[in-house]
Length: 176
Image 1: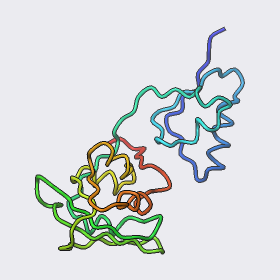
Image 2 (image 1 turned 180 degrees about the vertical axis):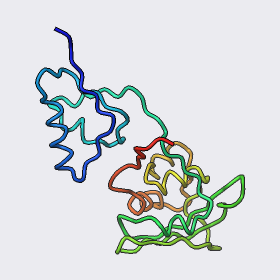
Image 3 (image 1 turned 90 degrees about the vertical axis):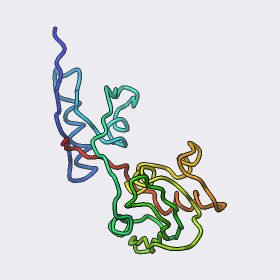
Image 4 (image 1 turned 90 degrees about the horizontal axis):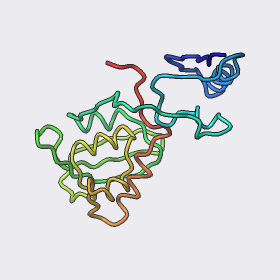
């Protein structure tokens, strides 16, 4: 008999419980031996729902979301923060608009702001690494280990890790 495949182009649910229920249904349809899906978030629940998480095969990964920060104060004022804290960031930008030194302050209520400052930077990085941190798709500690972020004050990268982390990695389900 032929192997039957259920193809899921997009699956976006209103809650984790709804997502679990949809995947459970799809994986238990009679006579379906394989379920294929399109792009999924980098920290998708699907592998965790399978009896063997290694059974989930990722065919390819695409950069569906590209970010280039132009206005650092506006960008950091618009995002949310998981923990309070402050950092002084030195940003290099070959094109110019985002370059400078900024004091980032995150408050306990999850709001924050970035303002230009004359203080010495605790961390230095280029605008591309800054965009990754802004999105929540980069670890300051990993960026430092890779040489993409320089820690100029002891403990600043660990503090940045706490302040800038996000509950979920960024992902854009819509191609454009």
